Image 1 (cartoon, rainbow, N blue to C red):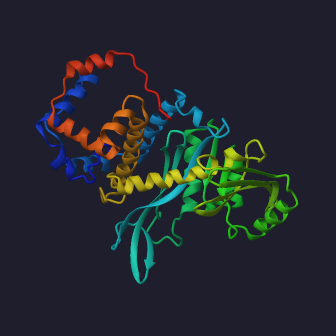
Image 2: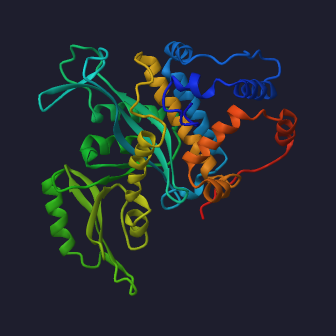
Image 3: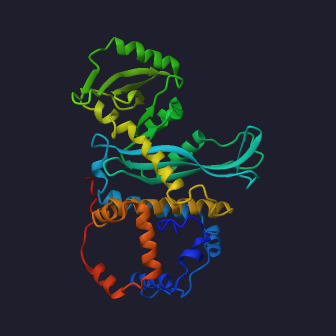
Length: 394
């Protein structure tokens, strides 16, 4: 449903219920599991909802974890590590569902211009691979109230601590650098990262910690040697990198670095607080476009694709609490698979040259499955071949 971008549960009936699709699904199942029984009819979308209502979301969490484990163990993402050492995991929240009436006891409540909305939001962790252009979901924490009469509502920061426990449990030995926005520029967050042996790059805004920002502004003037610059003589673009290490943040040392860009489009300034000391050798990797802290935009781009690219992130696939979460988690797995297809060397060129986009590819895949009977003998022959799928970074 998600890989074919059906957009709604009801479209299982209207877009997939053809003799060819049922036969193909049956055939693929029998190729991989010859002794297992497979029905000769397509189940209804309501049946899927009923099924997912009885499955603990932790089971889907574990399924996604196996997908990521496979990629890590095969070293498919090793070249995407920051400074060759740390896997970058971006953390950000997003709106999931919004209702004008209370949906369940777990709803968040927000009033805007006199109108009360009941919300379901999520905090997402995505492993970003800038060279490949991929953001792969590795962790999800649902932002929700424990009970209807909760004195304080759940929030993104509270959900972060729960998500951090899950990430540490799932990937206890993984070398990680978290990419976070200014909401997380807080001492407890930094201490948690230190206990977990994680590094961090947090967007630093003056309002986050005014005194620390003023200290940085004063110290950088006293350290003119902590600067390096890249200039493009043809375009006139200039990028200036500056840093100060061991700035005091509530009695703990942190490192502050910035990237000042001057281009024909204007001037932009990016500042981060970091657990990684900066120097002239690594500051570009930490701060330049397409690297380090600036890769956090990739998680926002992933949310946009899921909202507007046919996945239906803001569509209520179910009203049941477990089913609603399971639909969301399966959407993340479907998005992972689509990214792997797009970047894998077997399909990348065809998707780019023949179909132009993943959306068209999904439409063609849907047409193939629903209208053309699959040659199972050919499928078995292909599966017997030894092939290796590589990611293309060109």
